[in-house]
Every structure is written in structure tokens, then in C-alpha cells.
Image (cartoon, rainbow, N blue to C red; front, side, top):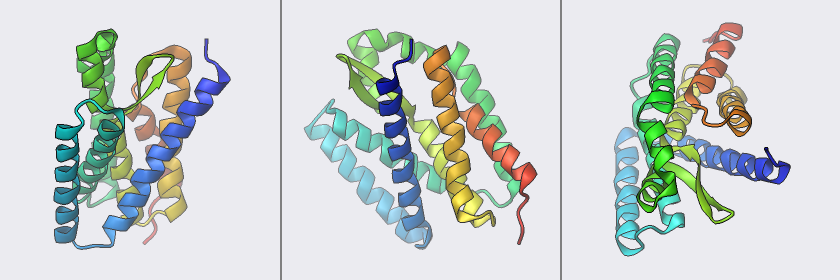
Length: 206
């Protein structure tokens, strides 16, 4: 059974995480690649040092997940030169995510969440919360990475700024809603579907 307060909390966390990634991407995209590389090096080095000092701290691991999602997404988006390339990347990622969730590493990691080793692993792979004494992965680092790819590439390819945020976010939130009702649900197929449907309805205008 899905409780409204839990749904509201998880939705708030997902929206906040996506807004952090979007804001970080907007800040970085205006800077040259060399400056982006330096920012990534400094941020990830600081995260590594914090992890060494505060191993297993939930706040620190969440910052690591957000940082990795942001910078990996930014770097990957550099290779996206056309709408077709973005669509192809999203379709491939969606297929891999679906297979991993239902018969691969993602399913295994979630099944191990009941023991201490599984919990620690989830902390490094997903933005996490403690709910009723149990650690719950809310949104995966790969989901944040591809969200960042979408918001960065869509804006650069000529789609309106608001759409570059709202469309990928709707895909992520749809996956969250389905997951709360149906259980384990991969997010990337929903992200890909939202972006591709929008691209069909509103082609890039240069």
C-alpha cells in the first residue's frame, strides 16, 4: 500500500535532486570544457576525502551520488551532437536499465538491501533516505546522469529551456509513481519515452 506522506516525501526528494542536477548543469554548461574538468576534479576529490573521513555517512554518500550524476552526465552530453544521437543513447540506456532491473545487477543489489553489505552498496549507487529505520534508494546515480544528459543536450540542441527541465522530470516522476504502486521499476525507459515523445511532437527548430 502506498501512503500519501511517503509518496509526497519521495516526490519531493526526486524533484529536489533533479533541480540540483539541472542547476549544476546550467552553471557548468556556460563554462569551457577545461573549467568543467577542473570543477569535476575538485568536487570529486572533495567527495573522496569526505568519504574517507566519514565512511558510510548518508549525507556524504548522497553528495557523492549527486556529484557523480552531474559530472558524468555533463561529460556524456558533450558527445551528443544531434537529436538522433540523443534518442539512440536513451533507447540503449532504457533497454540496459530494464534488463538490469528485472534480471541483472540492479535486481541483485536491491535484493541484498536487507543485509548490511547491500545497504552500503545502495548508498553509493542511489540517493537514499532512511524510512522507518530502513535505508531506501530513491533515485539511482544512472538516472541522475541521464537526466543531466537530457537537460543539457536538449537545451543545446534548440528545445525551449523550460521543456528541457520539465519533460525529463515528468519521465522520472512517472517512473517513481509506477514504482510506488507496482514495485521495482526502471526509470530510464520512462525518461526515454518522455523525451522521445516530446521530440516527435516538438521537433528542434534552429
